[in-house]
Image (cartoon, rainbow, N blue to C red; front, side, top):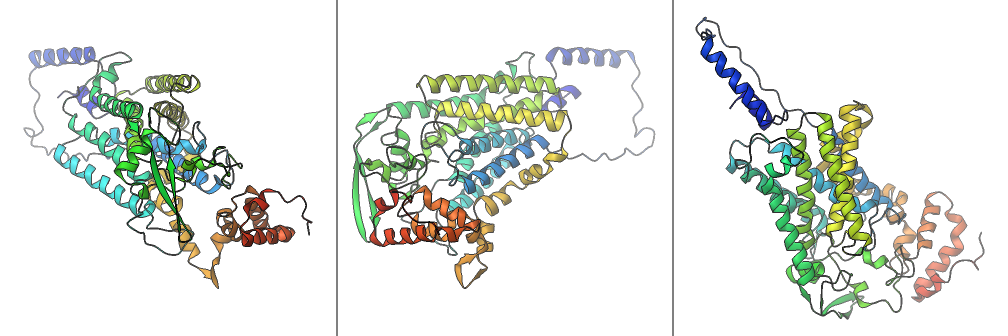
Length: 510
């Protein structure tokens, strides 16, 4: 293999076929008209040992991964207090809704860089499988219900109610499928690519074929699968209540009768789904919308039902996010110039954003994170492409790397930070050191979600005023709400949530 072709395969430049041909002709002329040079061995000199340098990490990728981790921690901790950054209750896209597709986009870029050279396909498949199993294990352990961090200092889960799917499980599935396609098609793709804007697409047609198959499976299932009536049981204080949801339709994209939820109920079982879906903040379910609150008296039965936001069918759609990410990685490998890379990245991001906006605002396919709709894939992937390009310009083109070193460190230790911070393991460790009672710990006293008054009242009342009381209590103004707190306790004792919804205007402040 000649030098320039090898550089392309190793991801060091973009070389056109005509350039390769010219250099091959030049080499042939040199070989025919000149005497062969004396080798190093013939001169009796030892050939120096050249150590192969390790490939440098891509600073932009680490910084972008770190930003996504920080974003996840932010929306997890502050989303319940500031609903504008929390997950959208159904259609639409908020700050929290960018986290998952950003992760999958990063996974795709990283796969392209990690698998650009595959000496042995069998060994690569083994490594991919092992990493996938690790992600599945940690996902079930941390999000299946086994870990109760940071609120409770206990562990264990009822196998009849374990949650099988979650964030890490979705990442594992997408990683496995995209990485396996990249590995087994390694020998099928050309070592050099033709000139032209779309040559990169044809060079990696098998990756796009895999993404298109995932798209077809999702769209055909979503719009053609018949969803019958279904029922579920809610257990509360040794009392079981059965609810029935009337469906009998196809192609429904609402909370009650969509094919995404139906597939999960059939595959995993309704007892193994996420029990706190974001749709409970819809106006149909609560008067406190878009915040969490008590259910309306006329709330439909599906408001009480579980739903898996990282379900099986929606994960098939999520493969597209990884496919788009791996395309950005291929551009990074094959195009050496900054301008060429940015032209490819930004143009694709703009196209994706335009497609998503048209689909959403024409009501053809609304942007929906819970269903992982096609418009949601396009919108979030386009946003990821813009952010990734901006990071690349600032860090790699302009050289402003120092301000992003903290994000780079988080990105280089993403799994550690995810487990310790985003999943509350570090907070649980701090909570393990308490005074007299587990409720009297540092984390519990600072976190509005675990405030004593909110833990006592939010499940029964759910009103945003409880959250305000907690916030004031943390800021040292809790004594000013003694009358309100007493009022809450009285309402709880009477089991009369309506009393709280009447407001606090008639209560005297101390």
